[in-house]
Image 1 (cartoon, one colour):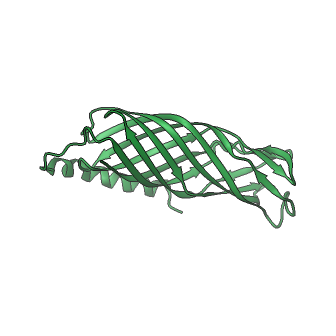
Image 2 (image 1 turned 135 degrees about the vertical axis):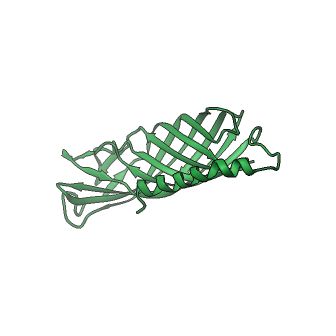
Image 3 (image 1 turned 90 degrees about the vertical axis):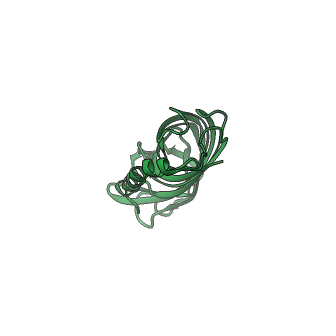
Amino acid sequence: MLSIRTLTLALAATAAFAPAAFAQDGSGDTAAGKRFSVVGGYSLTEPTRNPVVDGQLTKAEGEGTPTLSAAWNITDNISVEAWGADKAGYRVSTGGNKTASIDGQAYSLSGQYHFGAADNTFRPFVGLGYHETNYSNEKAADTGALAGNRIGVETAKGAVATIGVDVNINPTWFARADARYFDGDGDIKVNGVKAGTTEFNPVMVGVGIGARF
């Protein structure tokens, strides 16, 4: 698994190169007025809360996953973003022993505000929107508290908040680093009976490369 340190070092290298690349662009092109953008990236998932299942506190750990987003830039500062991630695995343990594994796949629709002029090298942004996270491949470990039971996790729905920064490489290409917080719970069922809620409320930290048109 890639570490957050590796992801941030990759963005830092891009940021160091970006000012020179932007300054050398002599085409007369500009980032201003480009109304569509796409970003492909990779994010690490880290739950901020741990679910209680059948009265037992568990510990959840996330994994990394590819992501993709598309945005309509209403103005140079305001955009609407559709964002989605591939499946990311969650490892759930009790007392230090693996209890279950679950795959979560998140997607969201958000409004965003990008600070500064479109051609600024660094452009921080914030966003707020709605997400749904679908869960699948729920499996109980062969040993542990849930061994031999059938597990089901319902879709989590709620608010998503985003903070990030774009680093312009040239008027078309840019690098991105962002963090997204997903609020929302889904029921956990054991053999069809509610036994708790997910309560993962994960943070996804990622980097990516984007293009605007």
